[in-house]
Amino acid sequence: MGSIDRIWEFLQRLSPLTRSCLLSELERLEMNGVEMPGSSDIQARLRAEFRKDGTTHHRTANPSRYFFMPIEQLLIDGSPEHANSGRIARSSLAPIWEWISRDLLPTMARDYNAQMKDLIASDRQREIRQAANAFQTKVTKSFEGVLARSDGPEQVRGKLKAYTAARSVFEDVIKLMQALQARDELAKFNDTLPERIVEFDDPQVKKMTALLDGFRKKTPEAVPFALALVAKRLKEPWQLLRLATKAARSKNAADVAATPYAIAVSMVLDQLEDKRLALRIALKNNRVVVAKEILTDIYDTEYAIQVRLDRLEDSDWGRRLQSIMQAIETMVAAEVSRFPQEVGHVLGSRRLRSHRSLSGRLTYFAYKGRDAIQDGAAFCKRLIG
Image 1: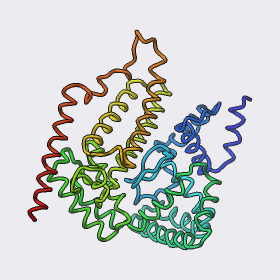
Image 2: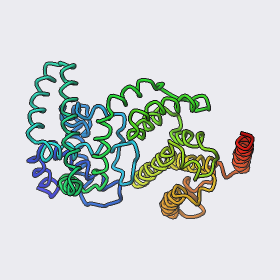
Image 3: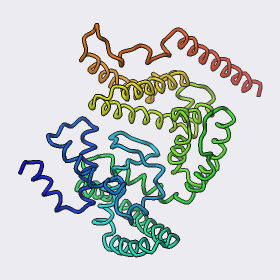
Image 4: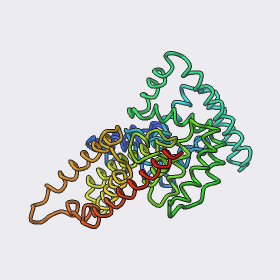
């Protein structure tokens, strides 16, 4: 029996939920560039096990799936180690559920599981939702009590370490509780949104801003989740930053930062971070065509941020953008260097950055010129006022 077979034999003694946590952890390590001999074979076996019935390993046992249902549209695949405002890593759900079931409310969790299995078996949907809502409320109130203690946050972090090494899971717990507390308002807000926003023009921006203003008055702490729901409807998710820039007195980063939805800029930078991780995985698996598409999206998003924000280099946003792009350029340079210079590499093509062409630069200056005129007109209006 080989070493992989012996490891697999040991894993079969663990609970399905524990194996699900293990798969999430292995995928997280891989995404962050950690090489582990034999990991690919173990991951393949775990994926085959959890997906043999047509589901993914993220679809944990049915009772937990109903518990997490209110945040389904806020989930993001992968295991980002960076901040991801308004989004929760799908891979965090398994360790969070383990923590709830074993540490936070073990007795209530057992009762909830038993109750839900009977309800699910008889397909009593209204009672299923009621039971899930009741348990969500108990969990959030219990968590509030834990956080109120001086040693509460460290205690939670320590417990979570038993299920995952990802530092981001604690932040995902906080976001989960905030989203569950605002679940009813988020559901109402989501129902008011169009299924798809193809053109995020001024009328649409104005309409979305009005909806967000109403939502913010009721649940201000849940605004990032509402913005994440809007971003899902956009043809180009980076257009979310228009909700911040449109409300600003000028395009200067400092003025944009003072708007109610300034976090939209950070969320677009989060998108870049996600794409950076996706690019790493694509390159590692020699999926050059996929890497090219991802890199093109990255360059387009970078350009959109630079066009719509002035004095970016003096802001935290600008410094973060520079850091992300430097990491991406290093990654691309390492990939391109694998090929002889005379052969070339598709990722080294200047066409991927079309905005650096003559027409692209003219478009850039046209944007900036238009913004300068609009800012000047707005300034004059304020003086007259």
